[in-house]
Length: 141
Image 1: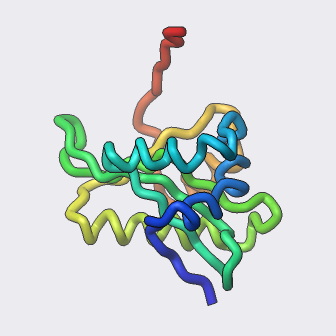
Image 2: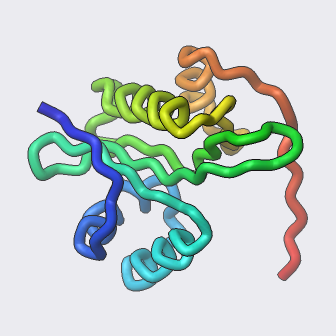
Image 3: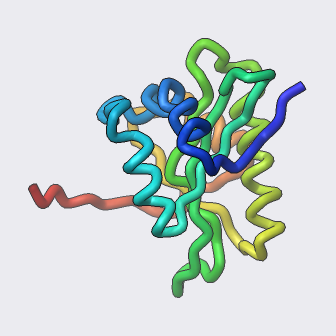
């Protein structure tokens, strides 16, 4: 039986590193927990889907308010363990995010996805998400 939890302890957060690093390979194990903690000070939350004690999928998200979307959930990170993809874990976690957003008075759920992540795009479109904007970036360092 799977369960989803919003993580709080350093041990729980560290236990998600191997899955999160599949999406964010630039992260180091040593900096992972401190970086998550800094982001948590800015409203970031980390949720994990467990099957027994094994992390199968991870999501980092924030509940924000801005002028264009009002109160909404922004999903920074969503990844299922590559050894367990196409088994429904990502979909279960996505559906939980939608419910959690609604329970927290969010009118929308937003995320960005790299242009090269075609299978992720198919997943999001199957979940009835729409492509509504282009995201622009400027490297400053």
